[in-house]
Length: 292
Image (tube, rainbow, N blue to C red; front, top):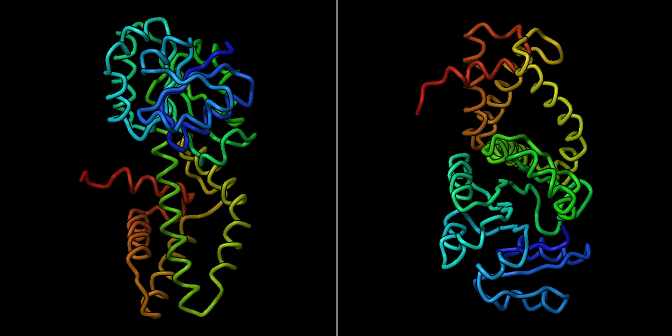
């Protein structure tokens, strides 16, 4: 399968099309603003007059646009549904699990195979050996396009047949990222308040990140096993540490919203009798939280 169509030429879509070209693929592109294709056409891409024409040009269609609203507008444009019959649509527009399920149902009605994905990298990071992309859907469909999609990312995580798996894991990993971002900002505030170099703080965080990545991998396995016997980090250590962070913030007169929230979770864990379990047992507190 040496021919591929790319729908959407924003920053990420452009990077995707460029990588396919650089790997020697025959690439057809389409974008609502045709001018965005000029540089790609100069490199050998074919600009289609319509989304339907672009889809007809290749067995494999890769789509990456701003959101599912934009994607659905394109997919509902004249001739697209008919053109998708017999094609493989790989949707790399980030969406929700529910949107992935709806997209699969719609694609199957048109006679198309469908994979749902989430790119976890910036456009400049695409095409590298460690570029992470999540994909889910029919395993046989994935096997048929795996080699082509490796042009985009060396670290593709295929998460199985459940179509919503990629979108779900994208939400899960982003939850980690934004939680860590909030903690990082609080840490920067602590360093700044004491007149220390925030750049040095950033370097320290980078240096410890591989170790903590391995730690969280272990904690994930603990949660999956359901055995919270202490194996790496007793909960009581974190109960004390998060309370210390909160008290220090209050004593320094700095914003304490983030440490107060985190301390609240660990205090609930303490009251629930989880102090002598593995740190991952904090999930029990979150599971039992009242629905908002």
